[in-house]
Amino acid sequence: MIPIGGDADPLAAFPAVTLTEAVLGTPAADPGRAAVVDAPTGRALTHAGLAREVAAAAAALAAEGVRRGSAVGVHLPDGPEFAVAVHAVTAAGAVPLPLRVTAPPAELARLLRAGGAEALVTWPALRRSARDAAETAGIARLLTTADLAPPHAPTGDSPAGPAPARDVSRSGPPSEGGAARPEAPGVDAVAVLGCTRGTAGPARVVPLTHAEMVAGLVRVADSGMVGRDDTVLPALPLSGLLGLNGALNPALRLGATVVAGPGGGRHDLLRALQDRAVTVALLPPRLVETLAYDRVVPRYELGALRSVVAAGGPLRAETARACAARLGCAVRQAYGLTEAAGLTHLNVRGAEEGALDSVGRGLPGVAWRVVDAATGKEQAAYQPGELCVRLLATGTARPGSVRWSATGDAAFRDDHGRAYILGRLGEGRPEPPAEPETVLAVHPAVRDAVVAPAPDPELGLVPYAFVVLSESAAAGDLLDYVNDHVPPYKGVVAVRVVDEIPRTEDGEVRRRALLARAGLPG
Image 1 (cartoon, one colour):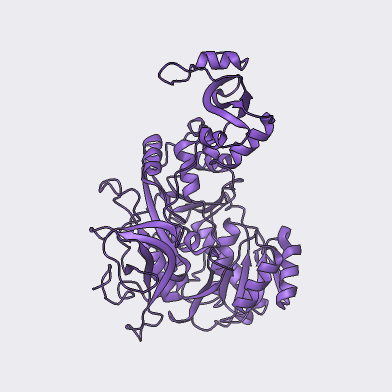
Image 2 (cartoon, rainbow, N blue to C red):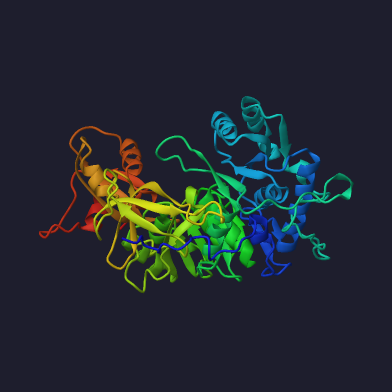
């Protein structure tokens, strides 16, 4: 059977250019439009400013002795400086290894060793932990963004307008004395060292060529997920390939704006979506659930959103439908992995086809299949198995040199050729989120429980839990217990102990009588 996606050379449809050429060498961008914006502060670099900063930082890396082809760890929070550093390393002919800033020093050191890094670029405030990791990994060259910055830091462009940007897309920066550096690396050279998500063991370092990275970003850029006029917010870390090559690089190629570093809290996300007038949001499923169900969402003005894309795990159709109805925008699912240099699937027509829980048929150049994990035999439609993706040939001189990667994700396909992700292999489809009443009812100290809205002077009606005890228990302990076992959007604000939960003959809760028993206004 021919794998879904066909058996043609997966690189044939993509330009044979380097990563820097693909991202910074296109004429699509308005030079004065913001390229990357820091979500909390609003600090921004225009597209012209980004090219200028990349050129200056690439020259600084060369002056610091960073060798062509050497690996450089990039240990920076999401923001303009991250984009500058990653592309400066590439423009200098070296290979960036993006690293999570939340990783402990021991894990940083392990990944730096695994990637063979010879230098590390970090944020000044992170210098101490980065220094510990660098010393453990045997790296003597530790740089901060201050070492790479031109005389002005990337905090925006001058009112007089951006200075002309030197083209860094087709060659590295000049070496000392003005002599040109060697030509940019070939498309078969390693462009980026990506780190796997580490869900089935320690994160691994995966080398990805320029050809693979370009194919990964171009298939997203050409998918229609993002347009030139969009403002894109990826809540997936840019240090991961889904954020880097599934959002940042395609958006920069198209001339769009990327809002980076929205923070981990729901209010941080909602404030960034509102204040930055985000039009496309790439979110993990848990944040799509927040948009669909959290009671604070209506307080924010999110009318600019035209599309929400869920990636990083399965999303239920009912959640996608609830989010779309609440926000009045399209909700789509996407799928990708580090080894494939970003996104491989995007369900562009999920709503029209009634398949909101599918990740779609696969982006151009992607072939995939679902196999029995034990035998490797391809599964029939609707039969679950392990999703395998054909990885791109690493050399255009060897167009037949392809391999299949077992993703470790359980999936099935329907008879229309769409893929459905079930979760990690062996976990099956996630169970529906637990209800607070159910969680409380199984507590050994609780005989009966119900959740009902109660008035709050500041928030209006909020969910309270009311319990009848079978043995002594503190209301505060029960509150912690229930909120630890339900998603945040299903949490309750208080637990009240009552002697009885009044119900009608049909079993309906008599809310006013219940509130009276709990001493609350009705």
